[in-house]
Image 1 (tube, one colour):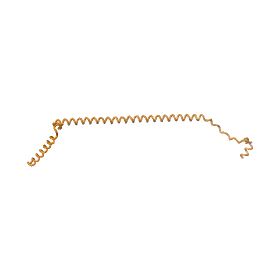
Image 2: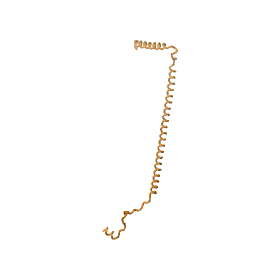
Image 3: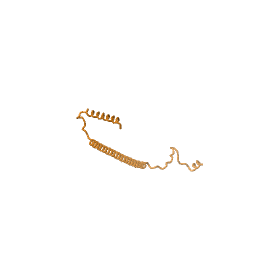
Image 4: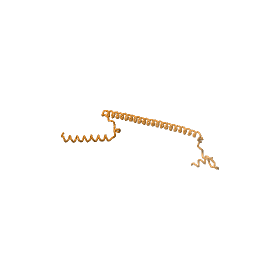
Length: 143
């Protein structure tokens, strides 16, 4: 590398260091964070990530439990609804059976209560008419 490149690189580095130092010194000492070694920072970061992973796992487990509970509630409600529907259908069938029996009973009672069927009635003649006809008149009428 040429001397010119090295010189520009050194000046840039020196400017960065000076700016960083000036910025650090512009903050009062009580407000500055304590210097931390890279090893300590990595350890702290690792602990933070582990805590975040644990919290995320707990949240996932909690959500799974909530979903499972909701699914169980839905299944329970469906079972209750199916049972109620079966009871309703059973009650309807029972009511229909009872109504059919009562109808049959009422029809039988009605049939029993009817007067007996009378034998066919002969036509009655009007008043003043006679019914008896001689055999000779009958033959004359026919023939």
